Amino acid sequence: MNSSILEGRTQTVRVIIFVLVSIMLMIADDRLKYLKIVRTHLLTLVYPIQYVVNLPMEWGQWVSKSAQQRLHLLEDYEELRQENLYLQVTLQKFEDLKSENDRLRRLLGTSVKMGERVKIAEILAVDLEPAKHKILINKGKHDGVFIQQPVIDANGIMGQVIQVGLFSSIVMLITDPEHELPVQVVRTGLRTVAKGMGMVNRLSLLYLSNTGVNTGIKIGDLIVSSGDGQKFPKGYPVGTIIEVTPDIGQPYAQVHALPRAALERNREVLLLWKQRITKN
Image 1 (cartoon, rainbow, N blue to C red):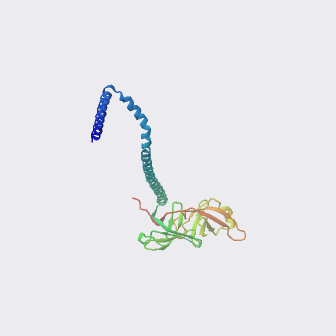
Image 2: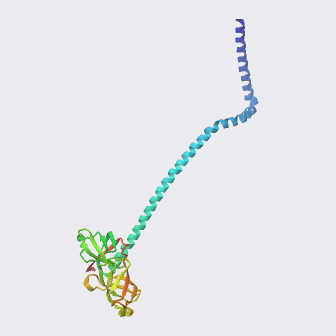
C-alpha cells in the first residue's frame, strides 16, 4: 500500500516537473528566442513528409480541375462550332438572296426596256425528258395566264404556255421536239423557223437552202423572234448559231443554234402580255 502511494506521488512530481520545465522553456523562448532556430529546422525536416502526404490530394485536385477545364473547353468548342455552322448557313442564305435579287433585277430590266407588261412566275417542276421539255410554273388563270402566252428569262425566249390551271400552268420550252418558233437572223434579216430537238443546248433552223446558207448565215449570228404568227413579240433573243453544215443530198442545210435562255438553270421566269405599259 505504501509502495502504491509512493508511486502515485512520484508520477505527480514528474508531471509537476514537466509542467515547470515547459513553462520555463516557453518563457525562455519568448524572451531569448532560443527555440526559434530549432523550430525552423524541424519545419524543414517535416516539409518533405507534409509534401508527400499532401501530394495525392493536390494531384486529385489538379486532375479534377483539368477535367473541368477540358469539359468547359469542349462545351465552348461545341458552342462555337454550332455558331459557326449557323453563320455559314446564314451567309449562304444571304448569297442566295443576293443572287435571287440580281436575277429578278435582270428579268425586270429585260422586259421593261421592251415596254411589255410582265409578271414573274416561279418554276415548280422541270421535265426534261428526250420526248418532252416542259416546266410547271406557279401562275394560272387566277393570274391572267392564257394559252400560247410567251415565257422568257433575262437572256431570251424560253417557250410558251400550253396548259393553264387555276393556280399553275405548264410551259413548253423551245427545245421541245414539238415546238417551233419563227425567227430572224439579226445580221442579214433572213427569216426561218427554230425547232426543238429534245436537247437543252440545241435548236434546229428549218428551211435554209444549201445555197442560201453560204451567203445568209454564219456561226456566231444572233437569231431573234421575228414576230411572225403573232405568238411571240418581235425582237426577243432566241439563240446563237453554232453549226452550219450544207447537206448536198438534201434540199436544206443543217443549221443549229444554242438557246440564249438558261432553260435548265432558272428559278423564275417572266410571263409576257402584248399590251403596252401606259406611261404617266
